[in-house]
Length: 309
Image (cartoon, rainbow, N blue to C red; front, side):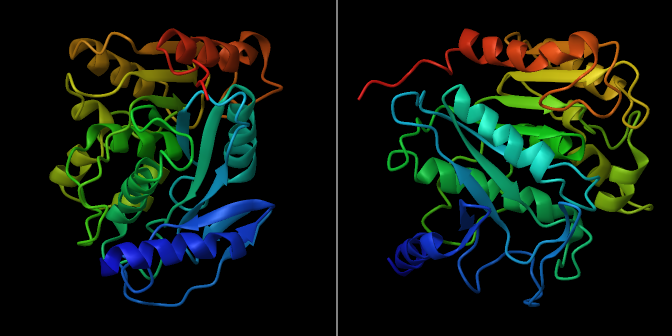
């Protein structure tokens, strides 16, 4: 009961903890944050890039009741696990999801560069799993179907989304009421994902997350394509063939693993242009179609049916 009361207190405080006009929901009860040394950090931000998160949490974007499909997506901003490009690849995407009836949550997760982390590699994963539990636990109150909650990310955020979809062990348990809530997403959307830590890996993301010298075990754990199975949720995977930063083979390897495991509702789109800058709008040539294709895919899988009130 005490843990439930603490959670209720956190959500009561949400109304007074806002930024950019959006509710900000802290992920951890005070004094209960996993993998923390207990340091009091300041938020560090420059040019809409956060390089140090003070309070891990998520910005909530709720769609209108009339358009609500009951679907929700957790968005993980990119930045090579060294910064969070939370506006253009977070908040703007959330606003777009609202226009198609999807509730969205932009997760400000701890990066492995945080001096407060005891085990840097697990910071992003723990925060992502906790965020999923909070959304699923509050699904009814927020007009969300607990079986229609997905994850989305670009670049390193896409790698984190893939980890959340393929790592089955719950690393976010703190002996509270959320321990029994499922961490598994119902769908995944990955754009230019830095998915693999072993094959065609993006060195910057690898070194920031795991360090230059790490174990084969950790590289395998954080390589989404090596952990796909038949229970993995369907994925919508997008990249550009001319990406000079993250090798597009990351996306091919991941999609191939999904096919091998018969997760056949997945989709892969490789566009000739776009580099490592596929955004919500103003993309070159046919790459501009990715959001329309994504919307149709969500509709095809039954995630955009409007709820009846």
